[in-house]
Length: 477
Ligand code: GLU
Image 1 (cartoon, rainbow, N blue to C red):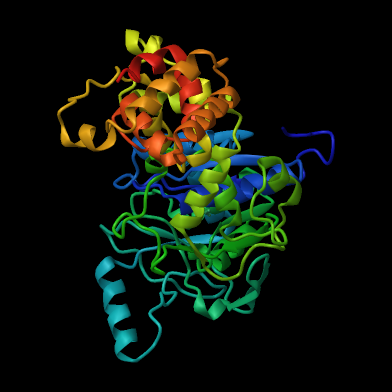
Image 2 (cartoon, rainbow, N blue to C red):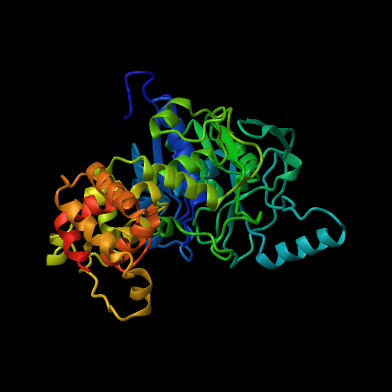
């Protein structure tokens, strides 16, 4: 898919998820946009797993992320890289910064820090580290206390401000006054989150950081560290949050479905991809587009500026679109696992004698919103013929003495038809006019005799797929 002949390796984007539990569609959107941007510019897309939060990270969540990306076809060029495997690298950078005077040890104890914070809050000041241990020319530092393990702080610039032109939010300026000397290593030496991100973005030569806008506050801190390290500041694009249809942030607590849930509910990856692409980005008024079109059209200029609202109805509508327009052979392949779950036992004799699954899928796809619905509807064709209780009220109501002659005539007409939907249609019309009946008067009892239900797709198509011989046997009245 990637064409490396044009501007090789110019654009490099990344998806940097924290594998902490629940992965919803909004999370995957944060993978889709950097992927689409890299692909649209013949660049590289990198996957980095930010797993340093040991308590909340899980291998299971990593699996869900990898699986979800694979399902949507978001192929990666490099990675996955795991931050936990790069700890030595972060420590080495911290060491280098200490040696160059870009960072310093701070021995302020937790208790002193808390006291400081309380005092500042009482004075209505913004809580901030006061720089006690920050080395300055001519400044005498306190005596190092015994028994306190220091943190390492980044020497944030004191003056000026950080300015960047966010591709979504426009120019953002944050005064350095507002920024603390960020802790980059904890007392046990482990690097902190913002620091790892910076080292990784630099080492991985990321040119465009496209991520959720919950990270806007981290950006000025990250930019200052990048600049201190002499790195090139990437372009940032902070994506507005995805809200649910109630206007709340997507989360498990308020009923958001996980990526796997959508897979299980019978959504096609093409529908999800198309839906997520539109959820915060647009190309004119295009609503339905292929992955290739997305790649061709994707740009940062057309990213939405306000929160996107997740609409289950619209996603379902798109899913129906993709199912009904799918190639029936491919769709049948995707539907087989769902059919098995719905109870179709393809190995059983009754199913073996049943119609070709591709034909059934072809008939049902226009009326199915999901693969689950398709599979449920397909079941009809693979069940043993119903055993009717001819004395039951339902049977008596539908299979009346008045209709029986028409059914018998239909059987005769079917026997001489060629089995195609068209010839079955002609046979039915002939019987209807011969008996002065309207279509439902005949179709309903016929459906009932065939399947014990009056709900089926168009009866001529159903008879054609089930096969005239089988139908004739079931219409025995
Ligand atoms: N790991 C962060 C998250 O999952 C993303 C960090 C980033 O993209 O810079 O929210």
